[in-house]
Amino acid sequence: MRRDSTTHSIQRTMGLEHVKQVFEKYGETDPMYAVLTNHARRGGKWDPEDFFAHGRSEIALVMQYLHDEQLAFTPDRALDFGCGVGRLTQALAPHFSHVTGVDISSTMVAAAERYNAAPQKVSYVMNDQPHLKLFADNSFDFVYSNITLQHVPPEPALKYIGEFLRIVRSGGLAVFQVRIGPHIAEGSLSAWWYRLRREHLRRFWQRLRGRIPYEMHFVARSQVEEVIAAAGGRIVDVVDMSRLQDGGSLRFAVRGG
Image 1 (spheres, one colour):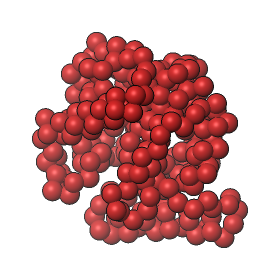
Image 2 (cartoon, rainbow, N blue to C red; image 1 turned 60 degrees about the horizontal axis):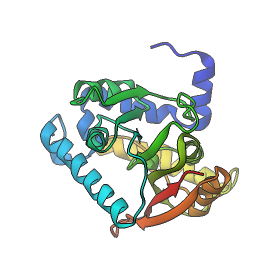
Image 3 (cartoon, helix red, strand yellow; image 1 turned 135 degrees about the horizontal axis):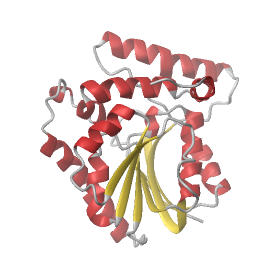
Image 4 (cartoon, rainbow, N blue to C red; image 1 turned 120 degrees about the horizontal axis):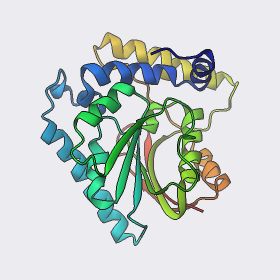
């Protein structure tokens, strides 16, 4: 697919080109493994029913959490950001009138469409831009994202969070997971070292091990909070999802302003 120079330039500037490249490749060759990287399931060994059952289990826990915390919302339109093969999009469908899955990879979207068990309620779109301008303001009652923003470099990840709050309706909810780390000033030596380690060295190491060369990124909690406040959102809960792994992982629940 031909891309014009403007799109190419934007992607390089925002650091999304490699993210797209990796998931385009694995969306075509081994999409379920790329989404849930259980190494015993590599090479097309994920059973689709088992794969989508993981999604149903996750969404069931999320819905129970929202119920327990009394975080109500209108069950009309939902967005699954970083939908991949539709593992969570399909699981959200019974809870909403319509669910849209969006992903940076056209091959992932094509795989999601093949496994779409509820085409009357679920649709998929591809977006490889560092924004969500394909969606109008106040388009969704619920925005959900898990294990996606951690693969996106900090600058576009923070922009996407701001976009979540633009497209979610007043009183709606955005629930998203990010990996948390120290604030690294742009242009500093730390920023140079961060990019070298998180992008180039990690890609090399992953390839050397025969694994998917996707990147793992973090942002500072203070930066996330600043973006939310600037977008008019209100944090209603934060859950630590780290599970004793290296590096913090937080799930934010944010009300639309």
